Length: 145
Image (cartoon, rainbow, N blue to C red; front, top):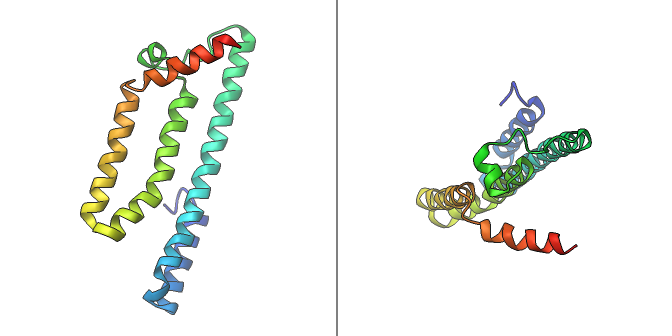
């Protein structure tokens, strides 16, 4: 972690030091605060990445080439672009943070494992294109405009 984001490592070190000073009764608040910072960092990174991908797609469209030419053929068949796939995974990972905390708080390790099995399952189903009925409905709405 320290080679990729030294600021986040400093935040974690500060949270751990604060926990030592304040004791375990403030642990929940410290973890929540740190996780909010991690979530914000992830959101900022995801936003930058999605904006970069959209700019590349717009440039490709302006040149007359296909905007999803770099995507895998299976994704093109399902009508998925990189931005949609990345956004779905990003949202599921952001939601994984509070869901993991709830699972661990209520059931411990089994709760965490069940939570992550569900997150994995939803992402696997999405990757296989099983939610295509959602895209078909959206595509029909777009064609009416």
